[in-house]
Image 1 (cartoon, rainbow, N blue to C red):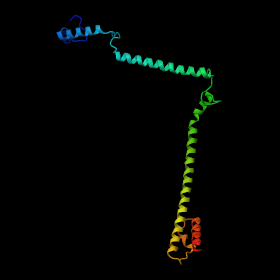
Image 2 (image 1 turned 90 degrees about the vertical axis):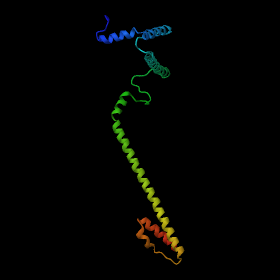
Image 3 (image 1 turned 45 degrees about the vertical axis):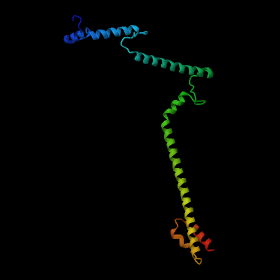
Image 4 (image 1 turned 135 degrees about the horizontal axis):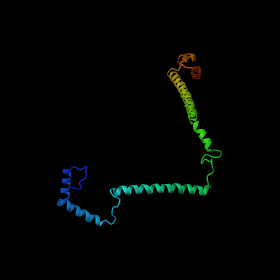
Length: 189
């Protein structure tokens, strides 16, 4: 009781002393002492567990290997290409310096805007081409259908003579009208 810590109440300390002096605890303590003496590699790092020590050591080894690898690869490049020249920038070609690259970083926004504008222009051109192509296909189909209808009508009634101006009401453009009129003239002849 004379060595009781100040922050431990007296009743708790009495219970703790009774526990330490009990037979099951003494037996467990002796077993643990024997087991500790059997260890080939005793734990000497205090409360720090082996798992944490192992993890820290692995991280240290990895970081050392990575830095050695980076230094090794740089050394390989330097041994082949020679030492770096001040102001030189790799993989950008001749005449490109660090100051040129710094100047370009400020203009990236305008470059992106120009690229976006070009993309939009290309999309508009593609849409226009598709529209023209579809209209051409539609006109060809309409002309083909008109010719087929006229041919069937004449086949059913051999004496049928069609007026070329008759189909003008259904035509959309002058081109459609003239092609329909030409088809009628060809079939009438």
